[in-house]
Image (cartoon, rainbow, N blue to C red; front, side, top):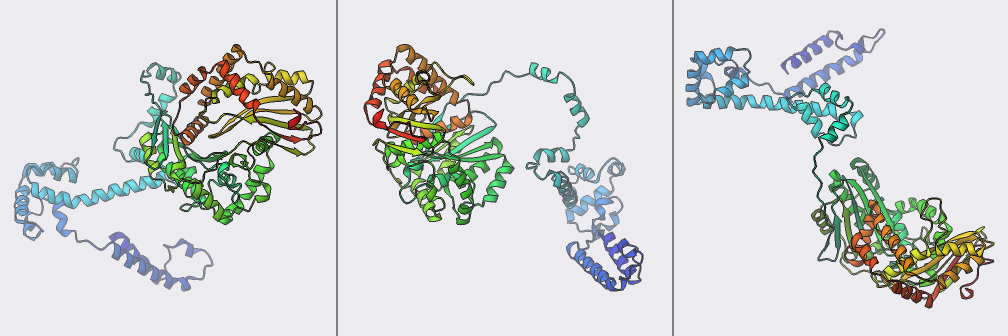
Amino acid sequence: MKGFQRKLKSWKSAVQKDNVSNFPSLQQPGYKGLGTVKNLIRNHLEQLREAVDKYFPSLSTEKLDWIVSPFELADMAEELDFTAIERDEFLDMSADSTLKVKFEKSDVTLAAFWHGTLGEYPNLAKKAISLLLPFSTSYLCDQAFSAMATLKSKQRNRLLSLEDDMRVALSTIRPDIKKCFSQFQKRGYAAQAAAQQSTFALPTHEPQVTTLPNGAVVASLETNAPVSHLAVLFKAGSRYETANNIGASHILRSSVGLGTKNTSSFTITRTLQQIGGSLSCEAGREHVLYGLDIIRDNIGTGLDILGDVSTQPAFKAWELGDNLGRVKDDVATMDPTTVAVELLHKAAFRKSGLGNSIFIPKHLIGKLTTEKMQGFVASTHTSSRMAIVGLGVEHDALVSFAKGLSVGSDAGIVNSSVFGGGEIRQENGAAVTVVAVAGQGASLGSSDAAALAIAQQILGTGPHIKWGGNASSVLAKAVAASGGAGSASALNANYTDSGLFGYFVIADSSSVGQVLGSVHDAVKNLNITEADVARAKNQVKAAIHMATEASSDSLEDMGMQALLTGKYLNPTAAAAAVDGVTAGAVRSALNKVLDGKLSMSSVGNLNSVPYLDQL
């Protein structure tokens, strides 16, 4: 610092004499502005010198020379800043010829020398070390900061964790990089690694379910996977909408990722990008699910985002306005099959909860205000209507997360549904017509639920072979026998207090009437054999187990069970329940459906489509 201060003084003096050799930019040919900037440069150099004096005041080092030259300053012992004991030790040490020889060896550092005298001259050695320590620690800090600045460069600005890189950069053990990489360049290294593989197997875990005092249900399964799948669910589907907020569940699922009461949309997006996370939201008639996929190392930050998004939505007016394009796309791109199923629910349950569509009506787009959306969330996002589930996460961590969520404790809105039956027809003149017919099915947990799942497989749910036609199913045979062009599939939907069971037909508009009649007769006159039941059981069990192969399906299944039943039945137990169903139980459940009221919806060219009472 003294050298730098002297340079500042020299530069100032040189500028005063019109010598600008230290400032190359002022030496360009033809430059005539020296007279203007000379005083500015001189004043700047003076201010810089004053700043250096302020932050780096001069230190008197004369009284510290004894640390560097302990054997040459014995005569100055009285003038040095010593206690009586330290002075005596200094005089004794300065007369120690053996220690002097050791000190004069070039391979002994100053710090090592004084550390070696701790046993014989403890007080003096401690004083010397305490004065040397700030220099070494400052150097180490500077070294670490320089290493960090080199690692965290502009080109590596997405590097989040520096621990491993810093450890290598600051370690006194230098890695042999060439040797490390040469091992990976050898052919056959994969086979060698396989030969040395340990027989260690990861532990298996059973699902865990906890019901908190506030009514929330927490379910998890530790999968030992590097990616965790998490979800927060609420009973906030379209069935819980009222006349004042029809379409709220659709707006809710399309608004995930928008700003919350605590976090902006940009911060949510940026944080997810940095931690390797993916946020999603889906909603049905009975639920809304906020999902997060996140690498396990960053699960803490991911849970913070998930909790904020799921419980603290802000629904800012300008963000809702910007989001209308997405909502309009959802409504405009509905395929005819989806439209038919939505109309079937409306016909079956009329104006009660399950009759509400999961899509907002076109005339209400843009009509749901911030206040209405916040009111819907307040009435549905409560602790007794909530479930938190996770795959690849510690159960205790998930329970702790659930306890920290800020939600209301009210029971919330209850919207029961009654199956009424009816018919809705939507004419659009299309070349292909879709017709859906169903009666009241089984509710979740009822004795008929498994029986109707088997009946669905007996009737047929589409081809099981890629590009195949499933010509062996009951409904496929009925379509073929009709002489028309089309296809048919069984339909089975289960809800907490009701359900739908039936079929839908997709056919050429000119022959849809004859296809529909043939399919309906096949369902009414279905002959159920033991062989049919055995085959259908295998198909149901396969569907149950195959659903667990995809983490997203497995997470949704766990969440729906925890939310709607308060427990979790693993796939093995669910498959065992299917085995207990008899052919008689399937016939009985199917007869209940067909003997009751039916509902029907149709979309397309309806000239040849019979009415419900004509089937």
